[in-house]
Length: 349
Image 1 (spheres, helix red, strand yellow):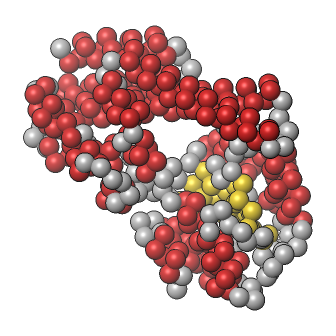
Image 2: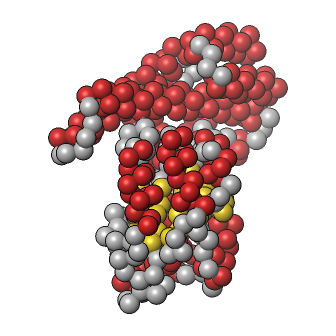
């Protein structure tokens, strides 16, 4: 029987719920890889799963479960490692996971180590973690969370039991948003099941991105602006940590902040292109008389006014996807977007 909290948290993730319930019933494995898109509920499921494991053998199971569910958790046998900046620090992985895994539980019978955004571990960290994954103490369980499993070394992934999470359904995303009904409906559909992305689309920066995505120069500027904001926020956070005693050189802080900025810029640029592709897909849907499938619900009148032939809309969406793939190969962004703009004009004119 699935514990009530885990049942509630995995309401929209039936495959994960079945796998985790079975693990609790038969005895959890030493290592798991929770993989799926951002916003799918991996972290919440990991916390609920860890709480059930820690409750086993505890003097007060309900209290152990309660403390494990808090974020951040005060339970001494639950270690939750999140990346600082763009990547996990090698020293933290070594100290807080690899070395700490050799210590017996402070309470109960188990220790849980969760590595959030595991794909952000450097190869050095991943290689160092291998032995712990291969031969952990019997009381240790590791849970790795990732939205980009391809970025993990195969040697890491192969030593973990995979737990798959699917994108959240539109209704579940909508339920976690607030705002004008039509805009919320559009953000939920354009998010691809990612609550964080949906919230971004409802922010001022997200609204600007939606409004300007069809103009390639403005799309680049919007991505650059968000990247600069992320870089500055990261720099400030790292400087505060350095002042609090975390050892980092000025160069380390600058390099890390720039990495975060570049990563965020790339994410927003890709999201912008996805919005462009979605726009043309919606134009094809409207032209085909399938308005109920439109994602941009709040721009339906504008879509109707374009009057694009469905076949042209579908072809335009294909060109956008081709450009997204090209950018993955590190081609010039400006040249790729300018070329896309010309091709879209030729197709839709």
